[in-house]
Amino acid sequence: MSEFEKTVPSELRALMKENRAPHAVAIESPDKTALERCARLIAQWAVCSGESRPCGDCRACKKLMSGNHPDVYYAKLEGKRNAVKISEVRAICADAVYKPNDGDCKVYIIPEADKMEAAPQNALLKLIEEPPQPMMFIFLCENAAGLLQTIRSRCTVFKLDTDERNDGHIKELADNIARALCRGREAELMYACAALDDRQQALDVLKSLSETIRDAAFCGVTGRSSADSAVNGLAVRVKRRGLVSMQKSIAEALEYTERNVSLALVSAALSENLWNDKYL
Ligand SMILES: [Zn+2]
Image (cartoon, rainbow, N blue to C red; front, side):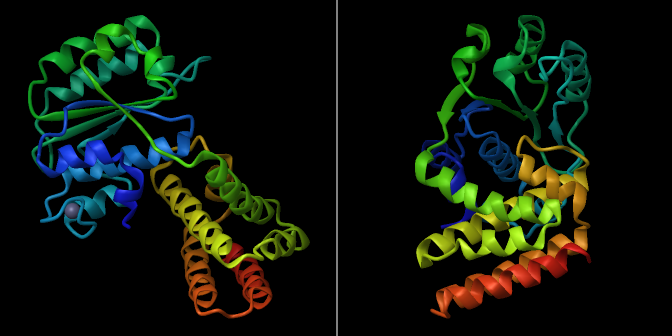
């Protein structure tokens, strides 16, 4: 299953396949990292010029994945509420009149949309109703009921499906490894890696850790911070080449785990490799 299939809600993917994706969507989940990832994949789908979107291979996909696609706009969060303010909405409205730089669609991602005050939400209404050109709005929220009725009625709401309990536990085990790396405590890292004592769980944890590291690399490139502290910690403390090397170490651990190598050996090698990668 691709990351796109795993992350983007199936109802939305079905619409995308028929080229009937709504131009304004609200994505709902308590998991902010999952929301960010989902928004990025929807944006990638919107700007991709490949055959089967998102292809991951075309110029637009590559630009987006390296964090600098000119037609994808991440609204800035500000102030005590850590939400999008009216000044930022004005900036969006001003940007929206310009034609897309690359493809034929512009994408606006609005994080923490349910925390926005009424004024900035109202200021967005006209743009959503009468976009001057093809554009897509992605509202990210914990609860779409927190959006003004006027905005909500113009969006199609999708919930991210997550198996929360199990996902939470997997993420916690992966975060323990990330945190130990951030703190620079080798014994803690060995301990966190040694917790991978079940083969299926080890595979899931390694994949989750790989996603965290990929998100950290993305934050590093774009200068954005993530809602996920493990992602931010790695983005701040490990250089890009260290993160790239960590991905290789994880890929190797995944391969050995799949090939039935003893988990004790896999976790010992993983912890040693990650420790070295951190200082690259
Ligand atoms: Zn593409």
